[in-house]
Image 1 (cartoon, rainbow, N blue to C red):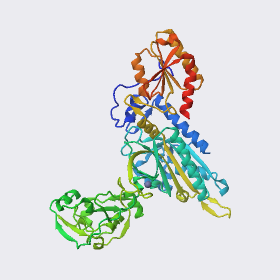
Image 2 (image 1 turned 45 degrees about the horizontal axis):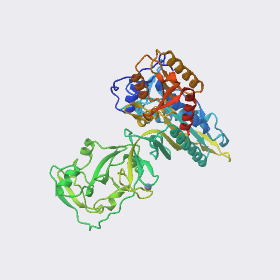
Image 3 (image 1 turned 45 degrees about the vertical axis):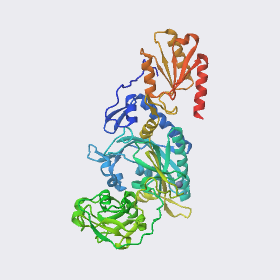
Image 4 (image 1 turned 135 degrees about the vertical axis):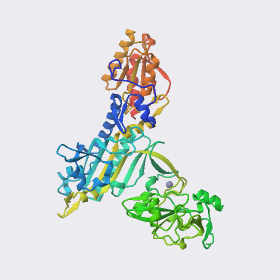
Length: 567
Ligand SMILES: [Zn+2]
């Protein structure tokens, strides 16, 4: 592209309403433009980056033997009604009506359609395995779109589905995608972690996430300081520390704690340690109230609670519910004489003589022990904390934040059962097909790369996805020699299949440098006065050093540099 005739602009001012670095830099560098909340236009430069990401994904999927197809976005609503997922998605699904009043959805996900496609082929076990995928737009009515391209309402996704007859087959298909994803994210130069994750609304037996490490990530990654243990906080576990003190159990007694409600306040008032407290949280679990007991310095993990109780939905009970249905006082809830099922976190089994609420305004109990109340169920319902012990090796756990850029699921027969996808096995018996599903969010990948690769001057694209690999700046566009040599390099490099952008605008050289730095061009060539001696300047976006090259050696030098880069 030559800037004198290309579509190109940059903004001097920071973007308004962009709270993330990537959202701001992508907007300022003229790559994207916000259309409405969670909906963006990709401008030519941004579209080049997106297309390169798409190509890398396609190459690795094709290498793994996957077959690309295209699903529609406009989908009759009865398809989601039949699978029971219209209710699951609820308000997150965009729906619309046609002129005959028939209802449609803008596809939020495509499992149903992939099963339909697979059923065209599958009759017997001989028709599998295979993997089909698409790269297409999806639509979800997010409550809070934010962070530029990271949480949007219309987004591009690669989703693949594997179909197998046996469990071993599914394991193999899953492993293939696991490796393909590693290749993809390595080629994209992302700093990422692969973590175990909750199978959530997708269901199934195993799920792993590819998380780009970033301070604006919405997921908490729990990593071991010593071994390869890595997990999303949602499903993370730790070893419970043994109770070091062998205190004698005392009888519990009521203590007057006027106007102190928070654990900190009560601890100060009773002159006790905060880790001697057990808090009682009342949860609404599929419309039934239960009390959950965890240590005062812990947070409850709702994913674990939902799984432990095999529930559809768990939410903190409203104060109305607590007032109307339980014989207690908010702020002073405790397990003794509470008329609710009690779910106790396993860590509490180790505690002696702890403090709880007394179900009575302004009173707590001290010296409470597990024998003083009846727990219905004991299990792990707590969030891991930094410094907890790794369940694999016992060393301490550390936290990082991640942007989920990809995920892989072993779905098993969840969808084939609900959508009735069967095959005949060797004995002519009917069985359900085993599925895996594998997603990558392209916009998020692009934003995550931008979050990880930037400095005060702007973006620093890795060569693999940079909109252009080489930028040529001409110092004086009125000099015939400079312009003709710049055009010569531009044409030669283009012939070699290298993406070149030539800044032949009548602008100050400072402006040209600033623009190439802002849009993140990895390599730059400057053609100035030294061209009369056959010399050009060469520099990399990642450092400020300038190298002088002979014009005739420049193309070879660049080819060598790019070959090294790919190794
Ligand atoms: Zn470990």
